[in-house]
Length: 104
Image (cartoon, rainbow, N blue to C red; front, top):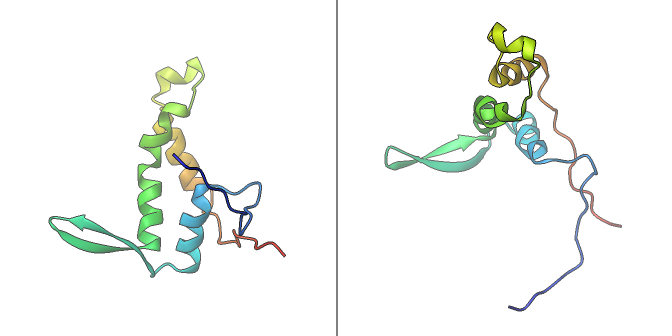
């Protein structure tokens, strides 16, 4: 298989991550249609705001296994999912920021 390489046309900040685009677009362009998804056989538009809400809704289930609890919390009904839910409730959603920096 042939391999090709081209110079990058942009750079990302060192602290950039995948959620920057999701929450940045939700903050800056909440009503823009981000994509369509098939629901009951028909395609429905999904706005940037709705997509960000969906990401936050699945975060506890997706991330809970990454949370390690101290043994004394095991008996107090604290779960990895409840920790993630608490963080999402307390931490403000990141604001939009310029992600791509074009080289000069």
